[in-house]
Image (tube, rainbow, N blue to C red; front, top):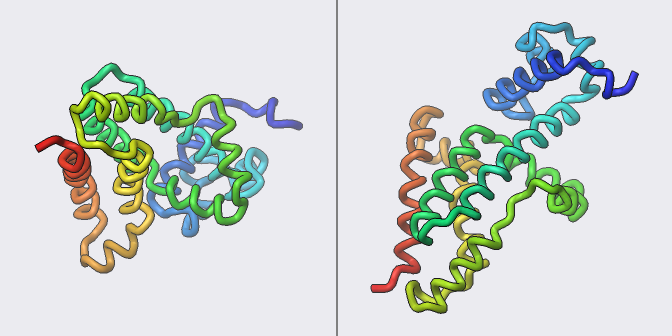
Length: 206
C-alpha cells in the first residue's frame, strides 16, 4: 500500500511526536521507539509510515523548511525601511531556528554527504528563501547615499552566518562557556538584538 493511503491524522501524530523528540534529543540521540511512544502508537505502525529515522527526519525537515521559507520571505518582501527590515529579519530568522534547532546541522550534514545535489533540491522548490528583495534594497540605499557602500551579498551572508553559527556550534559553546541549555537560550534571545545592531552600525553613515 502506497503512501497515498496513509491516514492523515496518524501521520500528523507521528510528525508532531518526531518534532518534539528531535528537538529535545537531537537527531543522533533520538530513537524510533521513543517517537512511537510519544505518538502513542506501536513501533510497527511507525515503520509502516516511515521505514527509517532518516526518512522521518527528512519529512520533519521538509515541513519545517517550507514554513521557514515562508516566514523569511515575508520579511524579505515587506515594505519596510532597511534598518527595520534587518531587525525583523534577524528576529524572525533566529526564532525559526530556535523552533527548529536541528535544521542547520542537518543541512550541513546533507551537503557534506550529497554535495550540490541536496542544495539543488532545496533551490528547486517553489517555497524557498529568496533574499533578492533585501539585496536590491541594500543596493538602492547605498546608491542613494543613505548607507555605506557595501557588497549586499556579503551583507546577507554575514547576517545568515551570525544567526546560524551559534546553533551549529551550540554544544561547543555551551561547554566552553559553562552554560546550561536554559541560559544558552537566553543568550540566543539577547543575541537577536546584538546581531541586528552590529549589522546596522556597520553600514550606518556617521
